Amino acid sequence: MNLFIKKSILLFVLCLTIGTVKAQSNDFAQYDLGLGLDFNSAYTDAETIISTRSGHFNFNYNATPFVNYIIEYHTGTLQGGDSLTTASGRQFNNNFAAVMFRAQLQMGEIIDYSQSKMANAFKNLYISSGIGFVVNHMTTINRASIKTPGFYTDGENNSNEIVIPARIGYEIKFFNKYNQPGFKIDAGYQYNFIMGDGLDGFTAGTGKDSFSQFSIGIKFAIGGVATYRKQITSD
Image (cartoon, rainbow, N blue to C red):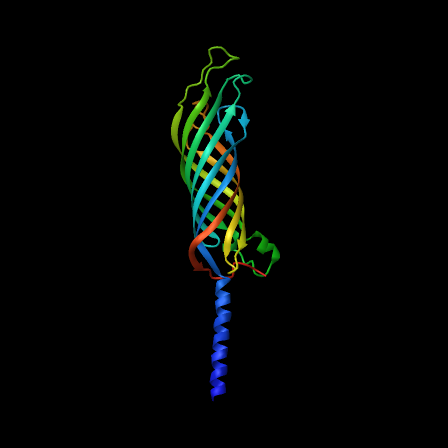
């Protein structure tokens, strides 16, 4: 009888241990902090596109490992135009700041990645969109054409505009000793639709301004452990 009790207790402890290990492989942090670098191109009324850089910081709420809600702050420079070579003479330097809120869906939320290496490779691919606003401040701007005397483009040196970000990217997850995502590398392409014409400081044409970003960033898990319905990793 005693032997039976000891074996039962041992079996119970073993099952509990196995269950705990399995639960840990489903665990994830609900909150991340991140930062990154962006390479920008502005599409505006200034004919010449110039590549610039900016930085971003973000806070992430992870409803699941593959459904994320992100608030992000961007700051940096947008440039365009060439006062010496273009007919309009338009040239600008915009020290901008933007705050954006995005919802992000990774493919792991909607596909079964446990039985296919191909599906497992695609589970971290994501699409994302949301809304935000951008604050524009022209530090340098040329409105008068050098090549066409008398030609001048009106506009404002400072403006605030709504922005609609649309993003596609890939998030590489690195797991800690508890088999939870400890930090992530995020690489993506984002196109920002501006609901106005003030990104370059010029009011010209009929189209709205926009800018694109190639970005690379890192995110660190900071807590709020929760359990997902399936294993995050796949053998």
